[in-house]
Length: 263
Image 1 (tube, rainbow, N blue to C red):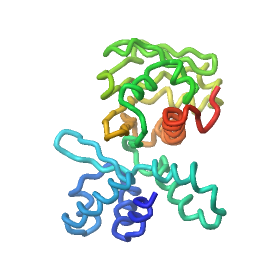
Image 2 (cartoon, rainbow, N blue to C red):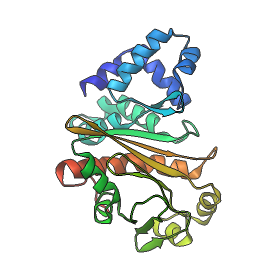
Image 3 (cartoon, rainbow, N blue to C red):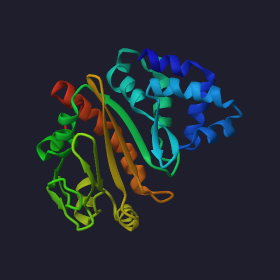
C-alpha cells in the first residue's frame, strides 16, 4: 500500500483525482485544461497514480481516457483497515465513498485489479458457471462464442433473452457480453420495487467487457461496464456491486475462499 499513500500525499495528484471525481473518463488534454497544469506535470502525476492503481486508462480510438479506480481503496478498507480504529480511518473511508459514488459521472464504469493467477485460470473464473456461482452467486451458461446467448441463473431465477449474447471472445485475453434482461422474477428475487424495475427495463441494454493482461506472475484485469444513459439506474446498481464482486473473485483465485458468502 506504500504506493497508494505516496500518491495520495501529493496535492497535485489529489487535484487530478478530484478532477476525475467530478468528471470521469478525461483525456490528458482535458485534465491539463481543467487544472491549469503543464502537460508534462500532469503526465508525470498520472504515471504515479497509474503506478498506484488509483487511475486506470482505456483507449477509445486514438484517445486515451483516464478513470478513477477504486480497487486500492477497497483493498485498504476490506483487508487492512480493520486493524485501526474508526477515527484514524475516516479520511480513507470518505475517499472510498467518493471513488465509488455512482453519481460521479454518467460514463462507463471502469475498475482495474491485479490478481495473482494466470490468464487461463482467470478466463475459467469468468466463464465456468460453477466458478461464477462461488464468487458471484450467478451461474453464467454459454459456449462463449461470439453471437451465442448467455443464460443467467440466480436465486432460482433463469434469465434468457435473444439479445443477451456474447459480443467479443478471445480466451485468456478479452470477453464482452450484453448485460442481462431485467425481468419481474429477477426484481423480486433481489428486492427491487416495481418503479426501479420499470426504470431499469426501460434503459438501453448495457455491456460489460473484461480485458485480461499478463503482468509477470500476476494478471491485470480491467472491467469496463458501459453503454449507460444519463442518470442510469443500472449504472448506479452495478457500480455498487462490481467492487465487492471483483474483490470476491480476486480472493477466491488467490486463496480458494471468498470474502463474503454468496448463495
